[in-house]
Picture 1 (cartoon, rainbow over the protein chains, first blue to last red):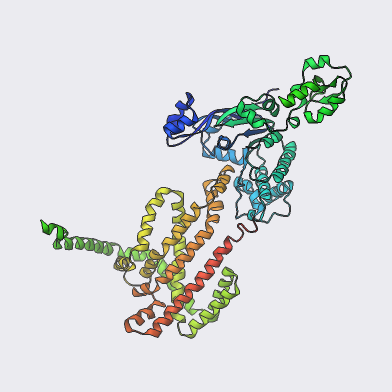
Picture 2: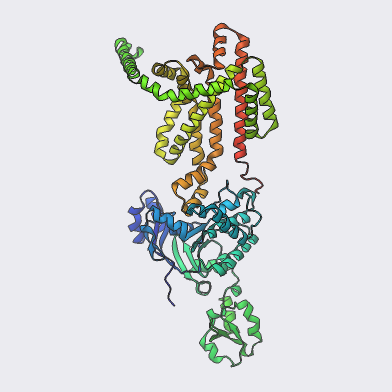
Amino acid sequence: MTTEPKIKIENLYKIFGANPKKHLPKVQHGMSKDELLEQHNHVLGVHNVSLDIMPRQIQVVMGLSGSGKSTLIRHINRLIEPTGGEIFIDGEDVLAMNDDQLRDLRRHKMSMVFQKFGLLPHRTVRENVAYGLEVQGVDEAERNKRSAHWIDRVGLSGYEDRYPGQLSGGMQQRVGLARGLATDADILLMDEAFSALDPLIRYDMQSILLELQEELHKTIVFITHDLDEALRLGDKIAILRDGAMVQEGDAQQIVLNPADDYIRDFIKDINRGRVIQLRAIASADALAAAPADAPQLAGNTVLEDALSTMAEAEGQTIKVTGPDGSIAGAVSLTSAIQALHS
Amino acid sequence: MWEFLTEFPSLGRRDLADFKNTIDGAFRSFSRAYGESLEIFFSPLLKFLVWFEKLLQATPWPLIIAIIAGLAWLGARSWKITVGTIAAFLLIGFLGMWEDTMATLAIISVATLMCILIGIPIGILMARSDRTQAVITPILDVMQTIPSFVYLIPVVMLLGIGKVPGLLAVLIYAIPPIVRLTNLGIRLVDKDVLEAADAFGASPRQKLWGVQVPLALPNIFAGVNQTIMMALSMVVIASMIGVKGLGVPVLRAISNQYLALGLMNGLAIVALAIIFDRISQSYGQRLQAHRGQGHE
């Protein structure tokens, strides 16, 4: 099954400073971020990032502050112009667009949710949610109808006529999310959208997002510095450091095969039992050794939920089924414990 | 040699006189050539000013007071300010200054209106380009610091004595704050909000009218307030070149040492200033009332 990526980023570079173009070749020939800053007083924001973002998936981009993740996401809708590289959306070259085409892209193809909300303080909740539609030129009756729908979906009914300044942070970001959804764009860019919220509210917002995504199937690019958030939301996770991509893959790959010490450090405190799924450690060898009547569990069961079944099973081994119901392999209690502690 | 150090090596008296005469002559021929067309250019303004003044003076005084009290209520939503306004106007009328006050009110209103119409667009242009700002800022500095008598000279040479030159003098003095505060207000708009507008594909025009100007309104209003105050403070000087109003009796009081006359009319100007200030300020505050309210 091969689908075209919704967003394709190729060899993207961004250098901040007085004359970025001049220093681009040096970086392309291996100059590091620190050397560039020291010798030429230019800051390397994004360092040769290539990323294919598939449609209908949540792609998380993770990194610590200063890793260039917010810079990267702003290249997708060209709020920031790259120094080098290419960006395609649905196969269209974003960098070749003129102002009008770019405005059209931003109005219809994608919308954005911001860390600091970016709400218009002089407009009510309703007017804020309808902002994207207003920019598109949709008439007022239609705007109100559609914004009412999204205000209801994010659970803000009854607050339509309040101003953002009268709402709590979590409620403000619901407005931001509803504004992002109201234009029905395929792509939703979320720049640390939940990072400014306290943990409980952040968890709520993640739940709302996952719930909406189950029916909307948008292509979401989600920026975060929080690994738990990344593991919970991301179908795919890309990890950035110093503007460069360190590892890319799904949660299983990153937790089971960390690319380097930086990522190992990142993942050392997570609860592996809640992340690792059976399918990631199922093997044919264990299947050959497994008794014929071993219990079967779905491949996307996490280890934490599978351990007790495993312990009670004969030979302490279970069979793992794939998405189509066929047997994909087996997992023994020993290998499960190894996966938890490696 | 010593003489060179003690006496500044200035242009000779004759050269200096020639220099001044050349400038004066050039300006005089300019004003002879273009004075009339300038007067024609400004004649609609003059007609409007005269019409407005006549209107104010012809309207029965209770109606004027009712209208002003209504505006005060709409602007400030405060009983204190509204009642104070009514009392002040009653007292002004009682002390025989009604006619002059209406004349002053006319020129202040027209001047403020002109300042808004000219000043806000200039402020917007300044906010959109650093180069425009670099050009206009020093011009505003000169307008605010040059003694008003100095620019009265060319204005009077060009247009003679009368309402229009008076109005121009008021404009030159009163327009800088609204230009500056419009520029400042737009530049202070939160970058995050502007980025959000960009991300949703707002055009420059949509950003200006939908985001920047509305968010700059409290500052723009502070500018309007300052402009009104400065226009009022020009009333006496403007009366020197033929603008009727409260400034005329003040001028008469200065030359004849009439203490009571000067005080009464002076205080009437102060009363107008306080009323306009309170109304426009509380309106400006109301504009931003919904921001940050109840936000923890």
